[in-house]
Each structure stands twice: as C-alpha cells, then as structure tokens.
Length: 277
Length: 359
Image: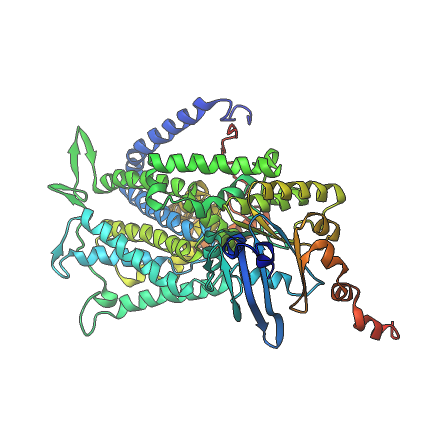
C-alpha cells in the first residue's frame, strides 16, 4: 500500500494522509466486467491521475465513486468514513465534486447561475426563506452571488459571467464546469478529461489552474488522455485496462511499466492482427 | 422607441408603468360593469386561470416536469371548500380557514402524485399525470356510494360565498357611495391574492430553490452531481404547484356556488397547460399573458361572433365554438412557426443580474 510506504514510521499518520481509499471496487454490466477488484488510495493534496485505453473503465470508476452507478462490490473510505452506496447528491455533500467527459453544464442558464447552483449543497434557504426574503436569506444570496463570482474569476471566465453557458467557448465551458464543481467546496475534485479537445495553449492554462487548485488545498482525481499533461502534473497515476488495475505509482515509473506500454500499444493483440491489416 | 423604454437608463419608467397598471386594474371592474356584470365575472374566472397557470408553471416551467393532470388539484381544492362550506355536510367554516386546508390537502395530493413518478420524465410523466387527473375526476364522480361524500355527478350546490363577519362577498351593497356588486368585491379580493401569488412566484424563481428547479430542468444528472436532492426538490415543485391549484379551486367553488366533476375534465388540464406554453414556459409574465388571452378570447368571440355575422351575412353561419377552435388551430400553427418558445420565452429573459459584485 502506497499510504503505508510514505509513512512507515507512524502508521496512524499514513491513514491520515489517505483522503480516499478504494478497496476491491467491482462493477459489472451484464456479462461485461467494467471494473474488477480495483484498489487504490488517494492522499490529501495529491493530483492523482487515472489513465488507460478507451473502454478501460475510467469513467465507470468515476460513476461508481460519485454514486451514479451502484457498485457490485468493494468499499470506499472517504475522509475517514465509508461511502455506503450513497446517492450522487449525498456524495457531493460529503465532499466529492465532479465534471463530466461530455460537458454537462446547465446550458440555458448564465455562467454565473451555473456556479450559483453549485453553492446549493452548502446553503440552506428553503421555501419560506425564498418567499419571505428575510435578512438571513438575503445575506445568504449575497454570499452565494459573491462566491460564485469569485470562482468565475478563479477559473478565468468572469468576463462571460452573464452569457448563457451554451454560448461560451469550448475551453471556457470546461473551466466553468470546474468552477461549478469547486462551488460545492469539495475535498476531492474529480475531473473527467478536462483537457479533451483543447489546444496546447488552453491545456497549458488548464494545467496552471489545476496546480492552483491543488495549492489551495483541494485534492484532484484526474482522468486524462493527454499524456503530456498527466505525466507533468500528476503525483501518482493509476492505470486501468479492461477494468483491472495494471499499474499504480509515480508517473515516471508507470511510464516505463511493460504492462502499461503493452496496454497502450496493443501488446499481443496487435501482434496477432499484424498479418490481417 | 427601444432606447426610451430602456429601463436601466430611465428607472422612473418602471415605477410609472407599475402605478399605471395598478390604476388600470383598480378602475377595470367599473369599466367592465358598465358593459355588463358578466364581464366582471369573466374577469374573475380569468384571474383564477392565472392562478392555475402560475401554479402549473412551477411544475412545468420551472422544474420541467410535464403535468397533464394539473386540474385534479384544482378539483381537490374546490371540493374541500365545497364540502366544508355548504349544506351538504352542514358545515359552514369561514373561507380563511378552508382555503389553507384546501391548499394543504392539494399539496398532499401533489406529493402523492409526485412520489411514484420521480423517475419519470417527458412523455412518460405526462401519461401518468394524465391518468392521475382522470382518477381524481372519476373518484369525484363515483364517491356518492356507499357513503355520499361528493354527491356524484350532481355536484354540490349552495356553496357558501366568502364572508368576513357580516361582510358578504356575494351581496350587493353601497360602500363610500360606490355600488359594489358581488363580482366586483371578489375581483378586488382576487387581485390582492394575485399580487401575493405573483410575488411568491418571482421570489421562488430567483432563489436557491428556484435555481435548483432550473438545474433539474436543464440536466438532472448534473444537478444531482452538484448535490441537489432531486427527489425532494421535485416533490417540492409538485407540492407548491398543487397548493396554488388548491387555493384557486376553493375560490372557484365560492364564486360559482356550485361545482360538479364535469368542471375538472382533461380539457381543462390541457387548457391550463396551453396557457403556460402559449405564454412562455418559465416566464411568469408570459404565463399571465397566456392565461388572460386564452380566458378572454373565447368570451369575446362568444359576444361578437353572432352580431358580426348577422350584420354581414344576415344570419349566423359559424358557431362561436367553431370559430374558437379554428382560431386555436391557427394560433397553434403560427406559434409553432414563429414563437415556438411562447409569447415571452424565458430562455431569452434578460434578468437584471447585478454586475457590480467585486471579489
């Protein structure tokens, strides 16, 4: 276990380092084994990469973690307590926020409103508060508004605050999704291919943003196909292939792992197909 | 023109316009009464439709849940009022006690409908809600045996009007030298309730709850991933919408004095939904315009079609009802071609979001 390796002297300290500990996570779709007994540990303050070829089970793992799918086996320990098949909204309340591979913003709402909705889970006004608009609700609304604007500034789309989300440029939409997720005050920010479709400049500024987020105290779980980004930013990387964990460790080590290379280049399968193509 | 009506440059315009509208609304019943008392009654019914449309707008417009059985809540509210304020059970509770009861019972029915349909959307939800509406109507039609609760298809008669002490809303009397007929008294009362309901709607829309509804309408999975408890928020939409329907139902009972299951058929549900869609789903002012248009146009036709045809052709060729349907059909086609999102679509709303917030 990696956590133990980092804190050999004081085992207790090691468990305090672990923010998320997944043990034997399993998910089946009919006969397809999407995830088989995947175990890993994400430490506080890390950027943890999750890579693997298409269909390896990365997004399935995200969906299982965030409660969109119900897992068939395994346990998650998050921030000292288990995540017992919680609903997505409970997972968000516990402190895991995510973005989606195919951007899922609230397209017809403004950028600012998108982020304001992210504040929902950390605010309280109910129907009576809304109707009466008492002092407490007004103060809360001001705080929501201000925080949302700060987050837009943080990710750098504050100039488009009042544009509809669907009218934002692609890269800005990705950033807005991150701002919306950050609005829920996550301890773990799970990003599903944030750099997909970005050009080199956009990826570079995204990288700077991710580093800012980590520096400001949020742990990041990152699915990404852009290997340059993954290798340069991730502290540790988990590699999945056909739903199985094939490697875990610092980026530089994983890069040299034979099984990883085989998985990415096709390994035996491509050798077998050589004659036919 | 447009620059003159730019309210950010001329903020006094908003106040002036507001006062003008209020003045018009205050004078309106007297103008209508000079044409005929029937028109005041028609206006009162139109205001009830505005209540209904605003209530349905919460479910359909804000939360995006297509509800084809909304009139059931209106029926529930109407029957609660009728049963608690008529000789049927010999109960005569005052209206300010019954209306909240009606709202609460309708709210309960809203949750009853919402709970089993939480996972349904679009067409599937529409079918289930349509069935729910019919179930309520059929129950009302048949709950006369073995214990007579609703008096079946005969309906309930002699329902009490609103009364506060000796002040009776249905009686004609002279106050401050003005001749107040029953409908005019109701009109002013409804106007006050309408103002309250509009304020509630505006505040709900621009609140944490309203944003959660919008989020669910836009993308339910993303809404859940952002920590919104979609189950509770959806149930809340059903419950709020139903309560408004319940209040409107109670008022309907009181001004009509008679109700029967016939008044709460599917066509009524469709009519209220048409008001919401015509006006612009999710836009409070649009929905109000839609409700007023669809309430008044048929009545205007009823009073004008016959004389116009007699004047031109010397006889009546088309019934007002036929013309109404022709116009509805035409309106439907024109709306689909030119304004598919409604008269005042909400997607294009330019909400005055504060831009001066500095971090």
